[in-house]
Image (cartoon, each protein chain N blue to C red):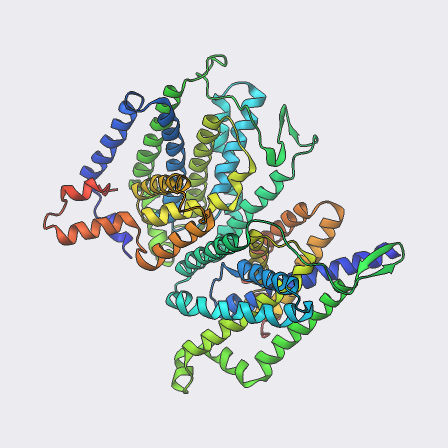
Length: 288
Length: 351
């Protein structure tokens, strides 16, 4: 019985951490169609922000929930202004440019902090589930992931800002005619996406090891999940996170995390062969 | 696109020039270089072949594969495992081509028949190589044995036998011979690709890259051609891996790591997408830069990622065509002759 409960919590954990990893990318790639290969590095920067701030004596919740998104959001806007905006609409060039950005960010962080593993310990301590000890923070993380996606959904469907953003993505010329500046909307949307990515990096910092190259463990899974999600970026990402998170966690439970990653990839490739348009290309077609 | 320029000006003189330079390298190599330099040159030859495979599938097939290093590594591991088990190198060399090609065919089936676009392809291939990296690193246990070969995880497989004369397992090749073999293979692959690109198959592959929809309307099965081109590129990358491994006597999972995957893209980007000589020169230039940086004290704060990232950004922003086409355009612009000698001196040639 305890084992079943443990397994359910593990699966929910897998889903929520995957969904958190994908949240920023769902906006930047899923909605804006900008290939941000530096996504993993934005998460890494979020993680470092939390670690550095917490070790400097800042409250860990403030570091995770405020400082990480703020710092990475600013870095995102700077990258957008200096680099990414020149490549809008040129997918392959964006891919290579952001790949260069990703290596550069790893290089800068390595030069500053060195190629060592750092981390912070999770707050809130443990609770007992039968014979198992579980971290309370992992449960909080599940709740935060749900809140985050509800928040994103609300902002993009119920607010004026979200309406403007979605309209501009669909038809920038029409938006410009209506007096909206598409470059500004792109900049702000990219910044929001980057901030969410930083937030995810910060929130996942206590349950993962932070090294400069940690981003690459995230980037492939994040892209695969958002791609599999399809055109309805938010809904698709949630559904795909659900599928992949479950698969990965169950296989990991039976074998090793590496085999879990392999199986996730195989499932993704086969799924894309069956549903080339992604999950929301076939079902949930009218979702966001 | 600028690539069309390359297709139009199929130039035999340039090709002869490339051939002469390569043959000169082949025959003069062991005479000119001492052993230390010769060993370095063999390494360059294997990376040049890897660059060539990427130059082919990206520049001519339009397939932006972020995990070409996966095929390089698979080829290397296939050779290592084969030669340790068989005690003889001829069949393992073939395996090092066929195994990655077959794997690429399988992967390509899912990717191209699933009609994944460029982006998805890049992500999937990158994920594949990183997963190989993680997987092979985790194989240090006793249970990961293929025949007589233990995979040894992140320690890598060492004392891998070098090439031997076909049929004579006890007569290994000397470094001079390996140099001849490697360089000959590089020349064969280069001209093989050139011939392939002139053939019907090659023309269709380039046509698909230029305009996929139109090629499809003309009745070509785009998916099939892409899958085969991808598989050919993987076979060449595997052969490069085999050369690399037999020359080093050693392979470890770092061949699947991000560093190499990034470098392959950079070689082609720097050399010029849509050329074949460019990527080879790109690989040479980048490795010489890298070796040189390693010896400079002022550069101690620099690390691989920083340098690589900066180079990619500079090229993608300032020299997006790569060095070879840029050198060629500059030469054509400022020199009134159609094929000025200066251009060749810069390694332009036609290619």
